[in-house]
Image 1: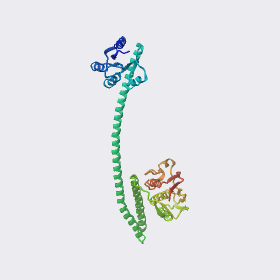
Image 2: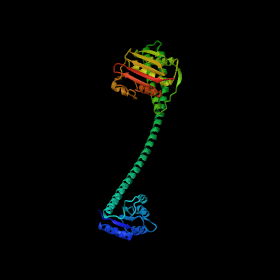
Image 3: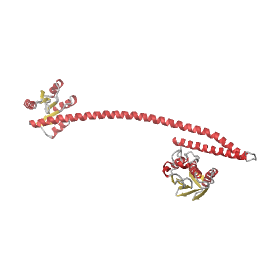
Amino acid sequence: MLALKILIVEDDNVSALLLKKALEKNHHEIIGVAATGEEALEIMDEKVAELVMMDINLGGELDGIKTTEIINEKFDIPVVYLTASSDEETLHKIAGTNPSAYVIKPFNIRELNMMIELAIFKDKKEKELQKLNNELEEKVKKRTADLNEANKELKKALEKEREIGELKSKIVQNVSHGFKTPLTSILSSAQLLQIYAERDQPQKAKLIKHSRKIENSVRNLNNLLTSVLFFGKADANKIDYRPSRFFTAAFFNEILDVVKANNENGVEITTSFTNLPKTLKSDTDMLYQIYENLLSNAVKYSKRKGNVHFSVEVKDGIMISIIKDDGIGIPEKEQSQLFDRFFRAKNVGITEGSGLGLSIVKKCVEVLKGDIAVQSKAGAGSTFTVTIPID
């Protein structure tokens, strides 16, 4: 057992003397004996104590409990109470000051030594715990400060990204719109060349051939710009659902006319329309993007003089559309990337395309709260099924 510097606070001289002898017998150093709380505090101001043996009932204005409260606050050393009473009220008062231990009078040496060891052990563990708590609080403060700083940097980065996104969107829209006007002029000129070429002249065939090339190139570039504009709006969250009522037959006939006009492979398009009402209500711009892209792809990637089947059915407020072709199909391992921007399957060869069409289709289907599924096998064609709720 460690030798300690102990202060005895006891107003009974006999008890104080017996306690002093018992402690000195165990090699402890008694720095003083005080009869009152006031005297005990004066001694502690002058000498260093490592433990206080405190009688609860003292003379003077400060009893043992009040004196202990001051010692706890000012000196932070363990206190062992000495009391002749073990009633519930006394024990309740003792517990309120968080004593290191207490000894019931009359005490024996073995019990006294055990209580002192308990007091020192308890004090040591409480201080270790307090140290750990303080270190933890410092770490929490530092982590919190680091997290707040990281949040500030993240907010700055997000704000910067938003500004860059808006700037990119504006640039894309301005450049795209800027291209569309001259492209329209080029397209008109190419169409005029075809009209002039119909008159008898030596270069008629070449004029028609090259003017059609110009026209097709302009249409492809115009479609690409339209796609870029679409994704510019999508990235800026500016794609809105704008439903309107339209004539069903006229809408699908317009799409089929556009697809057939660009059909250079002699592909036959067969249609099947079931239970279609005279009018429907939905966003026609998005429906146009869906069907024009899917049908154009079906024709473009079909075999020469192949067949594309296009069926539409309305059932229980759902429009179910199927576009089936007998073309080159999509390799199974690449189908998971099918709707990614700019993705093109490896088997497309030299067939022109931007890789944006199916991405646009997917986005439009999502905005319309519909679904799209594909079944395909390389060399055996593809089947796209689109389901869209309609009014």
